[in-house]
Image 1 (tube, helix red, strand yellow):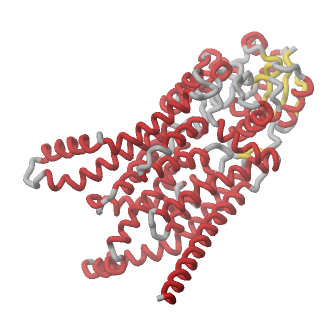
Image 2 (spheres, one colour; image 1 turned 90 degrees about the vertical axis):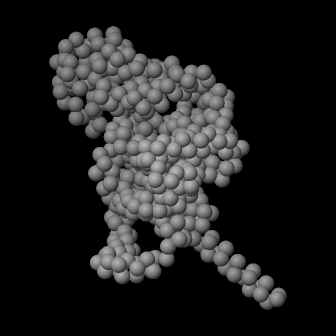
Image 3 (spheres, rainbow, N blue to C red; image 1 turned 120 degrees about the horizontal axis):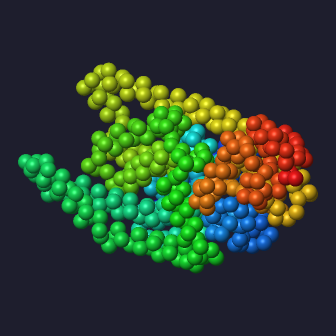
Length: 543
């Protein structure tokens, strides 16, 4: 008896060691992959320079309540740092490791942490081959690209998924502080409230699928059946079980919004950020960032790599066994579909779509593994249809051999995009000249709204026209935005001095190297003197 106890203890110890090794392997696989991507002296997104500057300003001055650096946008009066916690947690990295190394390592650790949390969740749910599923997520090229941007994507996913974990476990009190923190960390915090609604829908669908066959006979008219299903779904949706997470998250969000250093002006900002930019989106009126434009479905399929193939297979299996699906697989099916639709509307949601697609695949395929013996299934398929049986084996071999090769290829292509990013020194020379030669608070007009983060990072002595998103300027004054666009795109060439000096109150004008016609227009005007030039562009001082 004692010998059996000793053997059992040794077995448990061996299993624990193996589990630790697997966790360690997943961590290093993610960490080294993301570190390899970040090992370039560039950022892929201009906003990364803004985030880095805010980290430094918060470290020096505390909460930034006023934002005079964007003079002709609504942010001049209603600025809030809706990534505040994301910036605060980055301070130690930037302080001790330096600006670029520290911020890049912070990005790597956040992306790796989310990968590790995903793996831990799948293991806790007893998903077989959880390591394989996280690899599908890790090496999906569009996800790998987006999660490696020095932005708050991974930070948001960690908090959102933390909330989802407690929603699915039906532990509702932790949802209050998580939702509170989410408001302080990321402007897209309403997503966690949406998750509670989808949880309720998944629960009601599960109950409806189980009880539908008992409540409606086959002989019933199809219209009566559909009506009955919807009534049953509606009844199962509004239950105390489904209401609790919604109320907990709603309370946390309200507290996060009200108990906030930016309250009440944050209400106005959220309207601009979430509704005007996120939902309405003025991409037909202003030249918004590329992430807000639709994702062509064929490009999305191509850019999602093996994760999309896995998702397609899982969707087929889900539909075949739909009557036996549980609330978790239904939940992730609904969330994956939601983010798929959002991604088709705006590319930026792909970093949510891919993880939820992988979770959906993991739960669906795991159900098949638990309820269907694969070997017997293939043999049965072969007996009933020899061609399909042989084909299924070829599919299995293809998945085991070709998928790893595709993952390596996708990672290599993602790395190439990082090499061609924005140099750390972009506009450094121009910014240094202005810092040395201009007066504090003098307004500088720049060629493009997307140039502002680099200028702001290198020089916060001056104020600028527009940045972060052109919608902020368009909502401030649409006529001024159109005038700015006409001047910088060289569509307007007359009376430039009056417009730039009197309307925009600018003392300097930065012209990018590729805006040759704009430079010609300024020179022809005769009231602009070129005072500096380098590989990034030129500075014209108003006479």
